[in-house]
Image 1 (tube, rainbow, N blue to C red):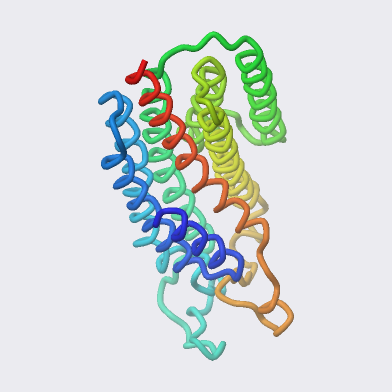
Image 2 (tube, helix red, strand yellow; image 1 turned 30 degrees about the horizontal axis):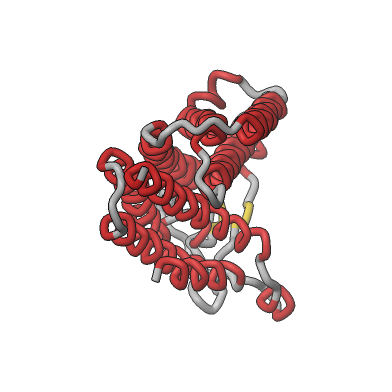
Length: 292
């Protein structure tokens, strides 16, 4: 059930159906929690940590789903003079004190920061589950996991460095600290998973996918904040007088409507597959320990 719901989520994201994609992703996470609870014998600490981590992902995903219709990207605004457009694309007329694009953008950043806190807590629980697994003497997998973790750390560091292009580092870290900590913690989980690999190597593979998802989340948050910062620190006439339309409410032509969002689908697949593979691998490694 979890795999089927995840596949539907990826397909929905492929055709740019954001709300159904998130609904199927939430169903996939809920089914995965049920699997972890009902799967065969396992170390209690591993099982509880997995349930807590995946459950936190699901809770914060539900919050994002509740926020989805209220995000700035779902509404078309003309700043600062016009009201949002109606379904036919016609203006609904002027409004008093309409929210500016910067206000909406800032609200979106706050939502992403809140979601990053949930991501950090979920990764922390998954780290507890991996640490609770038995250590196995496998030098090759341990070294390989260490190399991958170092490369991942270098990518995250390069991303932080590239974002500090005239922008204050304190502001960037203040906005994306939770996502950055989640990415660093997930990188540490990758390094630890090499010595706790299961027979099918699902634990390190799942840990790697989780690390990639956290790095992408930090990339998104830092990009959004950097764009907001550059615009908000622009010239006064640009900020106050420019009438800028911001719209991702829908495509404007048939060719755009028929295009497939492959990158979003891949990101969704990675985000859902990481915790699933990590959970299955951790339960398998835990059951193998009980049998021995």
